[in-house]
Length: 416
Length: 116
Image: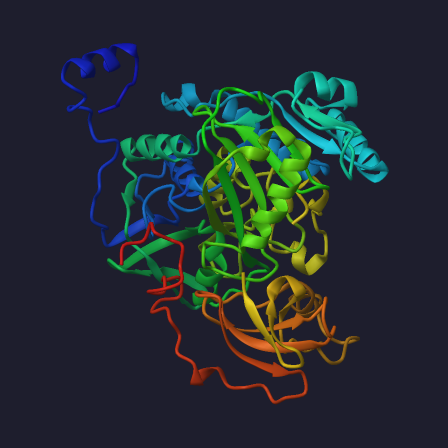
């Protein structure tokens, strides 16, 4: 039955003390065989299952997840959404995603709390100004809203920012008004609920142990709940994608590193947009609960510990306090790390590989959340048709043979 | 943050060091003959294991010397530090703390979403 949320369902359930809300998705045991198995129950994976069922009519789909849904990087990021990327290929991919975000709450009938409060990227030196102005022009040529803000305009929008009295003064910024933030859990839960309604088996606490292949063709996946045969397998396991690929004999150009974030105690509304600064390495927005959501950097070394070093937090806080002296006396509530898989060109891989029936959606590195619906959408297309969508054609594995990279280090939120 | 035992200076804070990625990567011979795929492998692909890993560090803000170590990437424990001209120590003398390729160790992981 289609679960519909409305003001009436809230009122009805209020009368019964909110005890009769239906389960959002089933918890089935895995069957023996599926047409497609998605490994990884984050936003990208759940979205892939959703679009496979919805747009490509696949009936027999399973999604397996080691922990719980959205408990990896979907639940650990800073939820920033924007599409102001430099190169055409990335601009098209992220803009495709942003357009899906704009209608996602309606499409899923589930509030993903997408708030288009704008995203600002600060320039602190002559080089930043040139790079950012170039990016604004490139965005405009691709039909993406992006504008250059003067220092005075920034001060008007974010009066708490210290623009002059710091080592790297703020000289201007790019601004994408359609950018913003969304609720990270909601995107996972919304996709999960609607995928489940279309018959996708979502299996949690089921760890993929080994991807089995035979004569260059996929056989299935060995899991903690037994062996599951499959015609196609899509691996969307962020930091662990490379580890799983290795079990199928595929080497991916990925390095896994911890990326940290932290939130402050909740305060009254003080900052109504998203401000990022690559040069001084700090980005911040305020959640609907009132917490400041602050993104830090990656550690320099490979690790799967989901913690990250404290020196990284110190650097970020130093930059935050310099940019916003008013935050200096605030307390930080929580700090955590997620394991991100970074590609040599800071662009993702959404691609098939040499093993028939094996597909990868990985390498999102430090900025995958914004791409969740777009990445899922084109990855579902790639799995269903065995061919990439024209939007993700450039993000294939062959680029690490041909050298035709999509170098987006400059458009990353902060230099990692 | 890691405490790294520099083979020349002794244990120092990680912030004095820079990471150099995977150790013992060999540039392929016969650069005229090898295929684009082999070059791509050498240029772009590095091992990324969960568990035991040979890696390089340089004591940037110290003696500025390079050295290698074996570190467990599932716990961040540094198991052995050795100089560049020392023979590559075998990995098998150390226990792998994870049971499955993407499993979690009993101690040392910040991933609390996985039931033990």
